[in-house]
Image 1 (cartoon, rainbow, N blue to C red):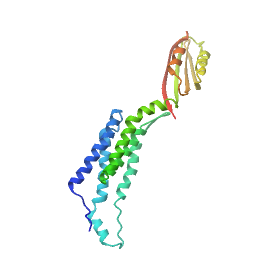
Image 2: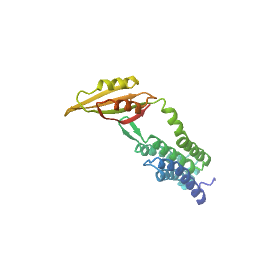
Image 3: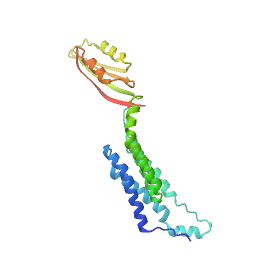
Image 4: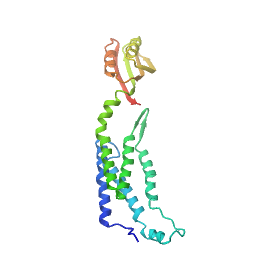
Length: 239
């Protein structure tokens, strides 16, 4: 009968491979100051690897019984426990995703956790080539493609932000501000105004097309004589 166990050295080798591969991905997330970083990715990968090892080799006696039964009502699937890792990682990844208004953060970290779990499963199963190749591709996507993303996406994404303006008198030149904004094809989505103690304050929600310079808009508005203060907050980019 085929041997249903592996040596201790092989178990250690698979776990160490998981530590190295998942640790590399975790280091990148750590340098990006993400909550799920170096140790989290290693622990996740190790857990996935151990689940795989337990699924394949942890029930050797039961597996032998299943093989010896010759189909007499005993069924055994060594991949069932490992398959549940995918579901479990989904819950863990969801905890890494944060949404603040239109801004969604943590999606890349959640995806890297999911990839680390897959690498752990592959290492635990002894599929080293798949684990190493996947790690290499993930690192390329995280490190090298970041520059490509910034270069390309910045030219095709629309940005949203809140422009805050404070005027020195209640008779504000808001009409001139609107002209400056619209002359650059920036759309005003909503306007809030407050007049108090002879001063006027406005908050304009802007939709800024790709390629428009926010600094140029701020500079032109700040040059108006009645403008006391101007700034933009909550600048976010969406698809």
